[in-house]
Structures are given as C-alpha cells and as structure tokens.
Length: 76
Image (cartoon, rainbow, N blue to C red):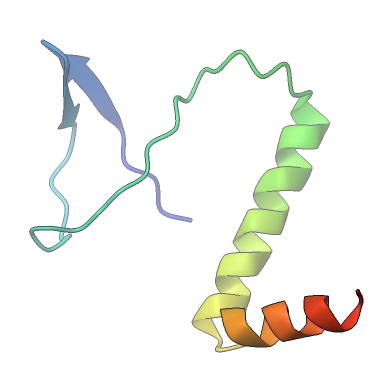
C-alpha cells in the first residue's frame, strides 16, 4: 500500500512530497497515531490483510457488490 506523509497547517492537510495523483482524486485519511489501542501484532495482521486485499484487487480477483448481496440474501 502506498502511503502519503502529510501534516496540518491552519486546518488544511499539506502533503509533504509531490504525488502523481490526478486532480480530483478522492482520498480517505486516517491519523497515523490514533487512540484505537490496537496491539502491534493486531495492527500488523490488519495491515497484512489490507495488503492482501489490494493484491487481490490489482490481480482482478474480485467479486462485484451485487454478487455478494445475492449470496448474502441466499443465507436468509
């Protein structure tokens, strides 16, 4: 996963290095130092799962939302 380092100046987020993201790209930001009390091993496991999911997505190993919803409805 590619991370961007940034800081806040006067309530605005400023990225610390140039990016090649096109104008209008939406980003979801999460504080690097949160108060979630997640243990280091739990965080490492979560980050590994996220990386695995990104790898699956990039390799085309995905299922569309409607297929997932149909499978969930079948379990009712």
